[in-house]
Amino acid sequence: MKEVVPLADPNDPTDEMGELRARTGRLEIMLVHARRSYADLVAACRAALNAWADGEPDPLWYVRDQLPRSTTGNPPPPEGDR
Image (cartoon, rainbow, N blue to C red; front, top):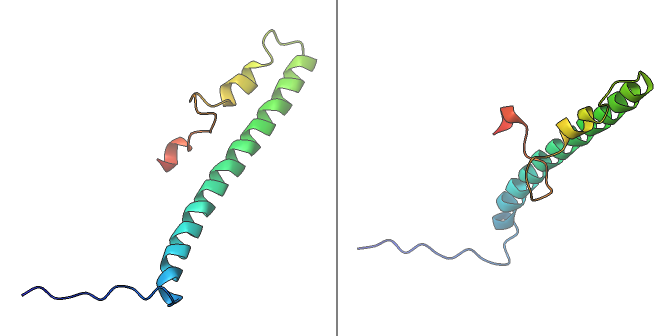
């Protein structure tokens, strides 16, 4: 005979806490990736400006190297975090 599992009480706030913690964790990870990508892009822009000032032939290479290769417009996660 199968055991009957009661449904979660929709008015019980403790049932939602686990889901909220998991969602918050995922959002924190996404924020870390976005901040890292932004910091890398800012560093690349600074390097490109310095390269331009130094007369390098292709100063925008630094920026192109940091732009995402995906077509969705979102930066992919860093290599070590996949």
